Amino acid sequence: MKKYQGKGVYGAIAIGNISLFQKPETTVKRVHIEETDSEKARFEQAKAASLTQLQEIYDKALKEVGEANAAIFEIHQMMLDDDDYIESIYSIIESQSVNAEYAVAVTADNFGEMFSAMEDAYMQARAADVRDISNRIINNLMGAVSTEADASEKAIICACDLAPSETISLDKDKVLAFVTAHGSSNSHTAILARNMNIPAVIGAGDDFLSDIHEGCKAIVDGFTGEIWVDPDEKTCEAYLEKRRADEEKKRLLQELKGKENITLDGRKINIFANIESVSDIEKVLANDAGGIGLFRSEFLYLENSDFPTEDQQFTAYKKVLESMAGKKVIIRTLDIGADKQCDYFNLKKEENPALGYRAIRICLTRPEIFKTQLRALYRASVYGSLGIMFPMITSVSEVEQILAICDTVKAELRAEGIEYSEKIELGIMIETPAAAVISDMLAPLVDFFSVGTNDLTQYTIACDRQNPDIEPFVNTHHEAVLRLIEISAKNAHQHGAWIGICGELGADIELTERFLRMGIDELSVSPSFVLKVRNTVRNLDLSQ
Ligand code: PEP
Ligand code: MG
Image (cartoon, rainbow, N blue to C red; front, side, top):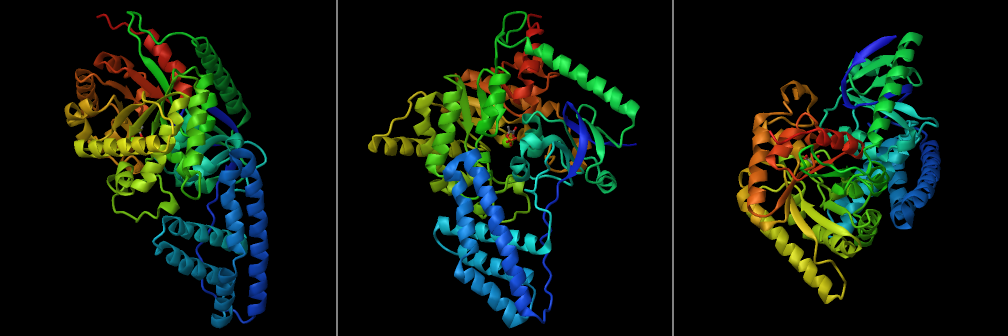
């Protein structure tokens, strides 16, 4: 039995077997080959295996996300059979007497560059597709373990680190817990683990990863960040008991369902939930959240291998609004960039991505993407109570530009005779110190503020939320952050706007009293934290 220490990011206990999350190895070497015919035969075999895998993925996607979303995997199959693509691979194998992996990699680069250079955004996005199918063939040629070959039983997923797109593509029903050797507690992977209600520990270290093996037994304590590998009988017993006690505590919280979020002295607030996908609504309803305070819509983009169309987005937003049956739903427009990378956006590699081309900056400079999303949102607005909010705001001029684009979208819909609601609330995220400092100038322009404490903290105390090495310097209760929230709350109310908190700090019950005293109107938290925060609110007395 061996113990490792990481940082717990979602408090719960998991006991089970480890499954190693393998990123496919795609470093391709150029190897001289005498027998080019057998190399071509190897390519044909790998291509056939890739076609079968893509058909399986298509069938799964068809069942889970519908025909429109599954269509891309049919396109991938067609691309694999494209004559020009195959001819290029054959010709490189023959003319240079090289291995198939190398020929596929060079072809992928050539075709990728050709697509990227095209004017048309749709054709540009094909660059990511050709790289994707080529990686699949290369993995099959190299016999690499595919990340889609999921374990048949629920397992503790262990990885060096997980990108948000990798986390979202895991089969949630097969995940008992997450453990990563690296990563930081405010990363989107940690947030996803919280929203998925699964025990998660990050930063377990490289030793942990090199010591474990596929299938070995482990205990993950998401409260303390401890991981026990090959635990003995006595430790298992103790943790089974701890898990029982935790489940009992969570069961007791269930009794708060249907009760108000009201302090002992009568102050009421809204407790809403944060979601990443339409399928999270189940958890929102099960935990009795009063609405959705943050729908991270960029996950619709991350789940797709191409820009989701207006209709695809409309269907998703309509479903969320209808499922919430008139309760408020705040959808944040696309927040791509930084750690949330989407190949088909073809974003350049940046020195400082958190300070770079992301979120509203992409939307304002690529208005066709922004307008498609806004049209889908406005069209869906008639199915419920919608709020739209915009991420990464730093200036008045950005908000003015956004409002002008919203007006254009509305005018276009009106001209086309398409209905939308006039009651949509428009808000902005306060997640840069600049926005908080000028919140008196921003508040008159909008209906609400929503404080993104994850980014507000990283920008205020200059600590990259993705960098695990600086975690010791991250004081999540830093007075500077709290004062910026206080300033924003005062300014919001002075101009008739309301203010919520949708960053992870909203669920920090050590701060609930301070937030309520500042006048925060809404806390939006992971669905599994709704009842815990309600319990805290109901035990507060703000009268003294
Ligand atoms: C935040 O920054 O606090 C926030 C809610 O947005 P995200 O975590 O998605 O960046
Ligand atoms: Mg943010």
